[in-house]
Length: 291
Image 1 (cartoon, helix red, strand yellow):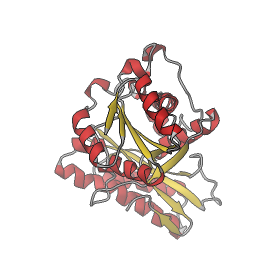
Image 2 (cartoon, helix red, strand yellow; image 1 turned 180 degrees about the horizontal axis):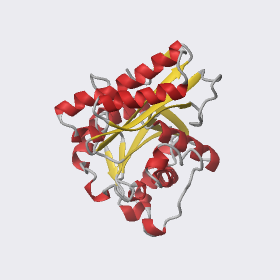
Image 3 (cartoon, helix red, strand yellow; image 1 turned 90 degrees about the vertical axis):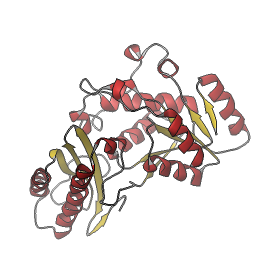
């Protein structure tokens, strides 16, 4: 696997691949990789000839109370894992390479509405940072396709809208959630949970499935289901931020008579760890994006 750190070297290598007619796939990450990330590499390999991953801990998506300096950085281990899982090139830039004027002075991308609710409301400015860094990475890699995990469902929608609105010629591919044995969605944050907490965190997926079942039964209103879900999470020892039923396309609240397709989203804290998960639902058939 090739490892490059600078824009010029990246463009030269990928230019050669592009001129030879190869389709380039891209998986952007912040490192500290696990099986969920490697599944994104596998998905990119299915539809592309040459797979690029990036590892960049992006300072602009960290909020005031989120410690950028403490985010786990394991580049050597990550590089080994990427090479073993079919990645062809790792882009490993520093902050100056991505933000040549410094991130405090950087041109920023804002995705209105989609970026302002749920995670955007809980973490102000977070999606501005995500959209900004993905736009910059797209400009540097110029991929034909980019793969993102479905666990960060709102992020996926934000990136899709940003890509469409700014005219990037990039196919956005959603990969399914990879789960632990108790249904907990794989995440770098899970390493901060002890064994008992990992078991406890399974209540998130259980609650998502319960909410889908309630939608199937069509007895309670969406608002009643959401309120009951918050209580279930609290009873399981979690501190819920939200448990909501939203439009699958734009995260708007579905009308009472128009809940035929939806996404169910949960965010909750377990100690200092904030966990998110979601489940897609379609009429009488729950469609989990990861079992």
